[in-house]
Amino acid sequence: MKRLLTNQICTITELREPQKVIDAAGGRPVAIMKNSRCIGYLVPEEATSADVPRPATMEEVMASIRKRRPQNQPVLDYLKDK
Image 1 (cartoon, one colour):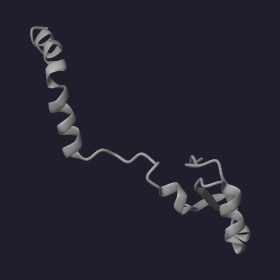
Image 2 (image 1 turned 180 degrees about the horizontal axis):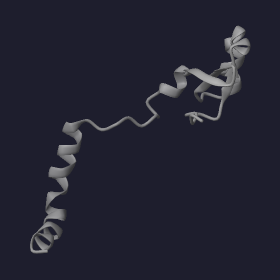
Image 3 (image 1 turned 135 degrees about the vertical axis):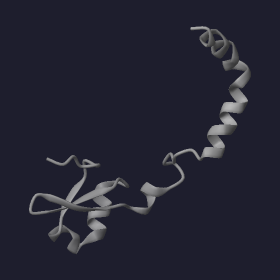
Image 4 (image 1 turned 90 degrees about the vertical axis):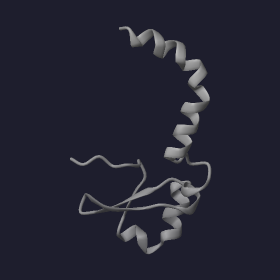
């Protein structure tokens, strides 16, 4: 059985009135079911807002590593001989 990525579900029939589905979801994504199988997801605009964390870019990761280098260097030096 495939795992759903949300606990909100609706059927194709319920999508005849999409605003009701979106209102009932409370801003969370909704799995669209057909014959007990998930065929897609309905994602309200508010679920994609700036509050949702996004993956860091490689530049952001490298900047964080450079910033923390002085704090991490003693541990790296200790582990070098191990």
